[in-house]
Image (tube, rainbow, N blue to C red; front, side):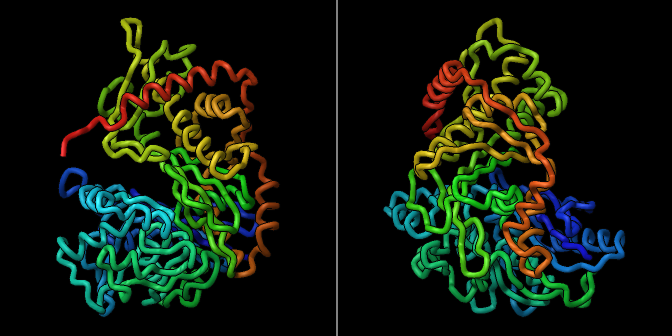
Amino acid sequence: MGLVLTIDSGTTGVRTFAVNEQGVPLGFAYREFTQHFPRPGWVEHDPEEIWQAVQETLAEIVETTTEPVNAIGITNQRETVVVWDRRSGRPLHRAIVWQDRRTATRCEQLQDGGHLDLVRSTTGLVLDPYFSASKLEWLFNDGGVTPDEHVAFGTVDSWLVWKLTGGRHATDTSNACRTLLFDIGTMSWSDEMCALFGVPMTALGEVLPSSGRFGETTDDIATGANVPVSGIAGDQQAALFGQTCFWPGQAKNTYGTGSFVLMNVGSQRPDPVEGLLSTVAWTIEDETTYAYEGAIFVTGAASQWLRDGLRIIDDAAETGPLAASVADTGGVVFVPALTGLGSPYWDARARGTIVGLTRGTGRAEIVRATVESMAYQSRDVIEAMSAASGTVLSELRVDGGASVMEFLLQFQADQLGVPVVRASVAETTALGAAYLAGIAEGVWSGLDEVAGLASRSDADRRFEPNPDRERADADYAQWQRAVSRSLDWDLTE
């Protein structure tokens, strides 16, 4: 017997979980860390504060158990950039977070310069400040970081591996593929992408399979020395794995601040598709699984805006009950393009719109339109994925904070015309990293055993769609009309 520990280093804090051999999370410790906003649109974290949070949560979990720790897994906020000095191990700048938009103009310049096709064909991504490379370029050009042989770059997982193992510089394929520097065809760092962004190859770490040994802990870590760090995946890929979407055509949606829809497309790299990201889901041994991804920037954040911006609710928890309190929106449609639109539009100049207002519109109708927008945006992405993959979705597996809203999940099922299945274990991201680490160390034999563990833990609830498609399709057509009015709205430089 023994435990697998998972470090979940997110955007607002670190949670460390203990998972037993039955795949059941036994508890977690949490530490929040500081959000730094030096200028409008800029978001930074202190890498040392993140590491301190990891140390404290590991110590807290280890103190609560007498069982041995078999392995450590890591899952993390993706795309966030950390640079440090190889000699001292100290950060050279605050981490630039995935939400940071300081390089938007630079990305537009690269796109106008005709680089998009090369970027898409090499990395599967688009030219957007969301990804790591332009942030790293900014650090070298404007952030005071010298791109010499002593500088090390990594996403958050790589920084934590360095600290846990006493200096191993490595990442996994699911994180490397989010940097705009990685060729998802050759599964290696791209000379062309590094040249485009002025990144020296010497700054990059070794890219390893998601399930496999990255190193072992040093004796100053709370677990003690020689505990293998054996599984790493970016948070959304870890959630796909934790939802046991192991086979092509299976998909999950995580409803958080934004939403991330991933569909497993198998072991062949998918062709680039307009509006979707092609990404590495995970690599086990020498086999890589790919996914289509749709990134939706604002879902749960829209509820926060209703509370903090419009002040028409006092608590985000009111959103679901208030939405369900009216029969419909009375014709109101809300497109929450508050920071532009992500997949499948990728329009940084789109802006939020609320259309269809009348004197009969009340706050319940606006709140319901907000919740419905979460489902409409997901349908946008899933229809694009189905068309690209030639796969008809049989069900959608869901998790994330907003998945507690049963009205949302029923409306989502009605919009998609397929069942929506909510996981019984909310922490699918942490589970995914635990499974990857445990498979590497022989805690579980492979995908079939992990799928069996998950099947013994029944879904929390299954939402069946209304068979009447006419109403759902008419509502969706209204949504599409509203989206057309929000596109390319902000014409300021």
